[in-house]
Length: 274
Image 1 (cartoon, rainbow, N blue to C red):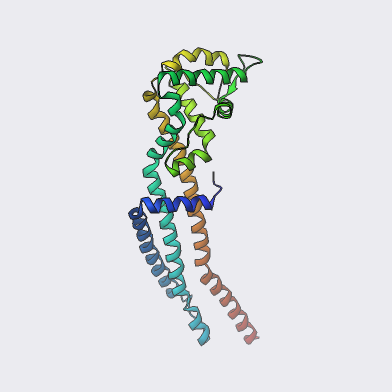
Image 2: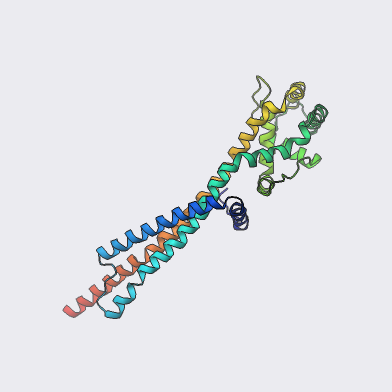
């Protein structure tokens, strides 16, 4: 989940900018202020320990350019962090709505009426039967049922919301699995693990038909929301971690250069003494 697709990420950021501009402005402003404060503190620390002092006149003037560079770099990276932070918070707020649209797109034709519900369960029964032709007591993975069902019937619609559609497209298999798990486990006194046999599924058939979609919808949407938030958090942490690593490395340049300068000056002093 840590693999970053920058094209998708920037598309999502543009989507959030259009829909939540005030939230983005707030977090970017907050990070901008933090960037300025950190720049002032870091510059004062460098000045206190004379990191920006050199013996040579022109060299001494040149290293003072580190101070505006520190401010510029901190501001750029702070604004970038604020942009992604704002997008993250906006998507967190919208996560239930996105998950609900994803769920509705995947289950509308399955539960829109009693006839559709019977057809859906009947198709599932055929898929499970096909997968267990050799032995009806053989355990079949839920994931395999989802794959076979999606390949055979292709009932999942694309959500109208662009972001929900993108989420459904990238994590469709896992979402379908969550939906199926949720429906099976909604049957009273039933706890489905990662696999089920045809004989077990056959016993659940009549109970599945009796299910009220409204009773299971909320819990399934929450499961999809948890997946969405897990993906979102993973991507956000990776982005922020990358920003911080690059920022720290850039902020270390004056210190590294100062250490090299001190080392060279000590070597020169030793040569003079000799």
